[in-house]
Image (tube, rainbow, N blue to C red; front, side, top):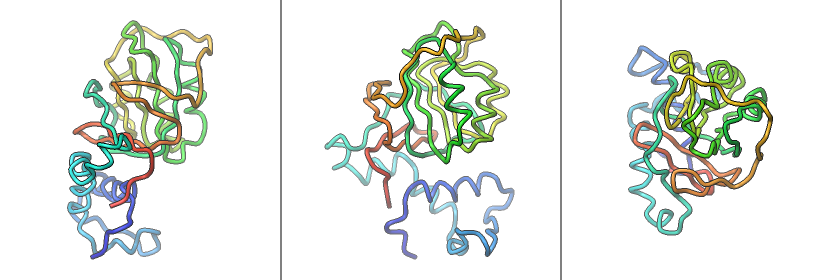
Length: 211
């Protein structure tokens, strides 16, 4: 069995198939682009793709700063606890207009990372935009700030991380910066880098990782 050269995002596709199936070895249609993986045990791949394992086998990338872990300050929301994708950055403060604008676009498996200034005074993300993000193919959303409509968000098939929940809504002035470097949870993140998240934490890589 040869796994060398496969990206972690490819492995997480299989993990998602497993989590959405009642069978321990879900059947993949022969017509599927991933039909070549039919004979591979999903649990093995899922274990290989864990963020902890990625850190253990890539000490050089950690030392060089090419692979960084966010500080463990985020709560887990949404049905998809494991997700990954190229990063889109956004910087706002107590304003959600630009967030909604991004999530109305096709996500194409990307992850929106929002620096909300760490504000705990209002929610900058709610249930409707998250539902739209799910429908538009975003893999996940990471918010350095608060969210609301938690029950609704937890019913969506998307990964969401945020500092906390808050019942008050944000402003709607449309002020913020798109595609700029941001610093959240002790880590500088640039547009186009890769994010990998699971129940152990969140990793940022300068490039897409492969096994």
